[in-house]
Image 1 (cartoon, rainbow, N blue to C red):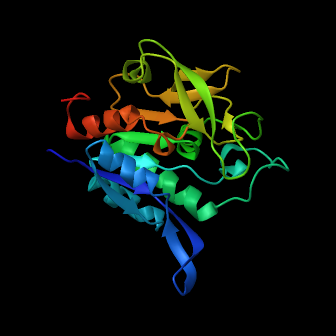
Image 2 (image 1 turned 60 degrees about the vertical axis):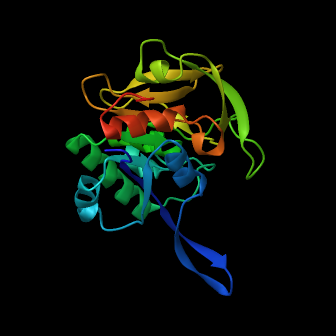
Length: 232
């Protein structure tokens, strides 16, 4: 398998192009570009009936859950903080179904920003609904350094501290079942999660690799989807 098929979740939002303004299935172009740069074929997954998620995931070699809106606090048993954004209930349901299908089917999974938070919630964890210092002005990525945990999947993928593009105001609080932290920011915020070796490739990062030049995290997903090691 030279180019595995990597699905990327999208979301529905009103958008304008040419003479048109109408609902569209969207994801920033950086996501498919990063998949392509890492050696995969990108397939965009529009929101759909959660009952169809398992069938969609079964056709993929790997899955990316993209960043975006805050997860509905009700999903992890919390009341909304005034600073939490409006929920996207249909998107939550669709992407949770995608995650559950990937975990059940052993399909390599990469969560990015919201995708990491949603993975944690899917496995019974909770979120910090607001923190400062991890986003620039509206629409502008901040950068900070993350420290990978040696011996983890992420630590093998990124063996040194790295400066990453970041834009989030929520983070992991209580860990979901079985998840291990595999990177931290200087303030202690968990910046990556993974399932232990032997449970397939399940990795999630709090930052936005699609907004930077480092392809290593996506290359690790593509390699797992291909059944090889990165660089092979």
